[in-house]
Length: 144
Image (cartoon, rainbow, N blue to C red; front, side):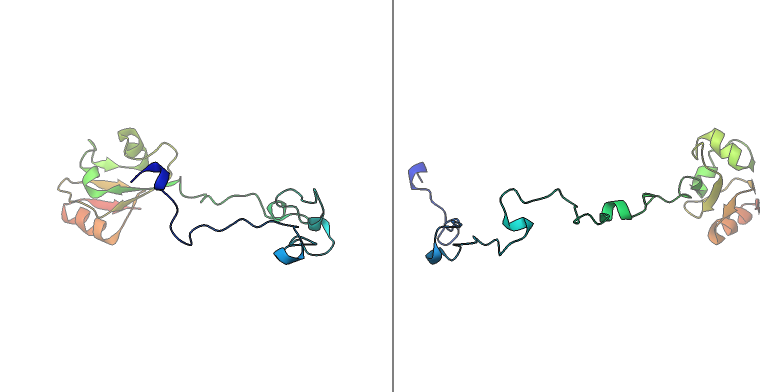
């Protein structure tokens, strides 16, 4: 293969349209712009999102965003992470101090992932059915 022999494959390229080059080109007279109106004229375009003076969509919609307001306040803790906490009486404050949940968390739920052998008493913390069974089987209790 030589650089001077390379060419595009058959049918992959087409001649570009030549607007306004006479009746025989198929794009003569109005040049594919139709008749009259702002878009038919030279320089007759407007900014993106302009709706002819009507209040544009991006200004009509509320600007609240799509962020869950509760996502930051809620957190999950695995059963096997409770083993790492030094005390037996576990509350949200204890979990924050241990670094298992963030500082802005207010609701914590223990999920049944992993195993627990340590006796723990949960105060003000929710637990799933499986987690509750595992904690009570290890000798602990859950007080919501």
